[in-house]
Length: 239
Image 1 (spheres, rainbow, N blue to C red):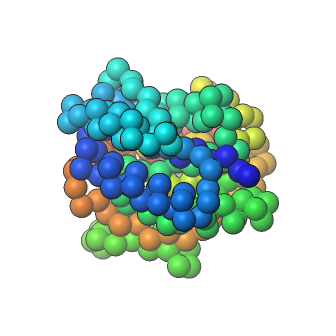
Image 2: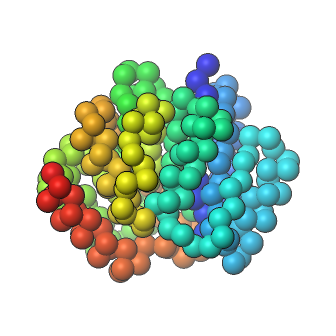
């Protein structure tokens, strides 16, 4: 039986985390999945870390890693990935946003794709069956354009380079030099896919419907968008 870990970086998500955890646990139980959820909290001022601790006390599936401050979503992923491999000895490691935009009901779809032989599975908004809810035309256009640009320049045949809903075979994360990944913000997502492709791991996509957050504020700032494009240029030169 596959051992699964789901890594969820959090920062000020007290309104969303309990519902997300409940949904994940329900999917685990309904589909007889074995594994855990790793919450990596960056000392959220709103008390998300405390809520995560309470959830962990009630359910052994929940594990919490506390960091001393807002250190970035990139390193949060890496800390969670390492914990999943070194402590939990997981076979499949997922990443998922904490704002309820990624529905846990899709977890079995990722696992089915892995069973077909793929090393990395991306939850994609931009393949048949995928989509976005509660975004305006401008945001859709910017997101789609950024993904086309990143995919084209970096030579990674993935329609959704910026999605954080993913599944990695443990061999992938063991092979990659995670500490060498320079991006610490959301551009981490494109950079790790770039290195997955560089190491010749097989990458596929499974459709998801992305629902924009109802509670809390988006962490995607203009500064992060600039970093995204600078990362594309840096990786393009490396390619």
